[in-house]
Image (cartoon, rainbow, N blue to C red; front, side, top):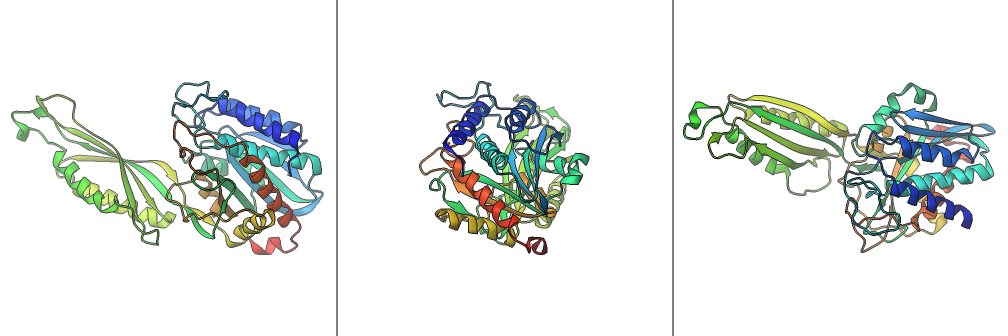
Length: 387
């Protein structure tokens, strides 16, 4: 458990991080701040530049054992903060409005505890991952040669959740967050004079047909194996002039499903429909912001659940899986993972809201969950057989 002085230190760290946010792929100063803070904990190594600006802080135990990874995110959002906090963002149009600053502070707190006690068995990796918001960071970390020797047996991460009581815990085996992908669809035809639209090739009919088709997936539906959600995020057709019939159109749509394979099928169906609507138009399709589904391993979940029970945490009334995506899902393919959720308070601004602020009081709770999980796994003689 963190001491009073340690809580003060990690709270100050969060405020420093909050004041100086950096966007996905640009987190160089954030990474340096984290590495500097944890250097005093005497880790066995600090690896920088993983998957971009990622930082891995490694603690080696005295005896052999499993490798356990705990992950936090480095990046902030391209949103202007509206609060008047004394530590509000000092960077225009960039802010920590998702709580990644608090996640980093929680993980740094675990580093302080490891610096005090050392590690009896196994190996712990505190991973500060870049580019979570774009879905690129986890894959880049996993593909980085520096990470090849750090492959974990277990991987854990949490996300704060406004609307749930402070410190309430939600976790369950199976899907924890959706797989998703952003499709950019472009229809290319030919402009014409507005008095003679038949002389051109307009994307309007194709766009209308595609919108009608996507509407089937726009309404919230049950989170079962057949779950499909399509959100139209951007539409653009022609130029703002009354004398020109349009020749080009662009659609941004985000697709979500409960598994990577289900998302692949959904994506193929939408792409086929987009082409079927095209008529004489050229169709260009590209993929963006790809997120794997986060799949919680039952044994990893059991460690989180037991930690919550030992710490006396309230069980949150929270429907899993959540519709939102989490880049942590990429780790599900090679380790026993658990993504869990901790309430950040009721009646607070939501994630990505300009007034959102991570509650400092949640840092010790999250750190204690991590510490409990670590103690359970390293004292479990059968932990290797459960992966």
